[in-house]
Image 1: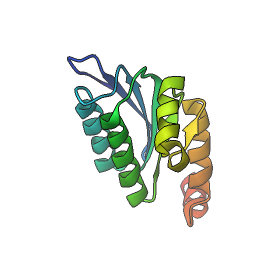
Image 2 (image 1 turned 180 degrees about the vertical axis):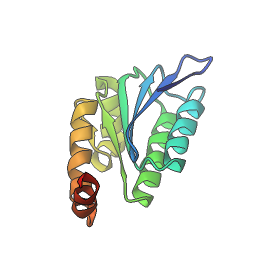
Image 3 (image 1 turned 90 degrees about the vertical axis):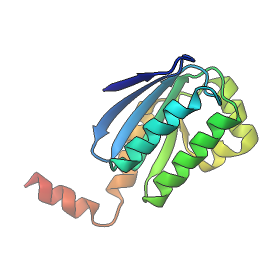
Image 4 (image 1 turned 30 degrees about the vertical axis):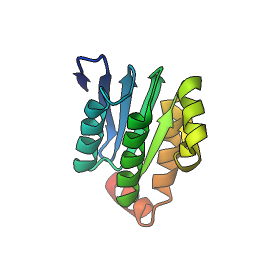
Length: 139
């Protein structure tokens, strides 16, 4: 697990749960002054083959348009790789912003990271060829 802390108090922890899946836990205000750290971490995960990302936002009390832009860019990159971005444990204040901007319509929002991981597991099981490759790996 890797932790990065910015001087403006944004902490980002990455937990790779499977080769293509990572849970990114964010704590602190997500704004123009702090968002670069999260953007770099998400880009790094994409570069390393993590096309399914879960952002645990339970400890993000505030997000501005810079934070929204980071989420949109990460979602678009994941989709480009036939993956997805999932938001989890979003505070009421941040959820209101996601609802007002329509992001909650285009990006799945879950009650917990575990719920998001369960949806991702289901999506991955439905991928063409995935069931055969899993059975072959189990032999």
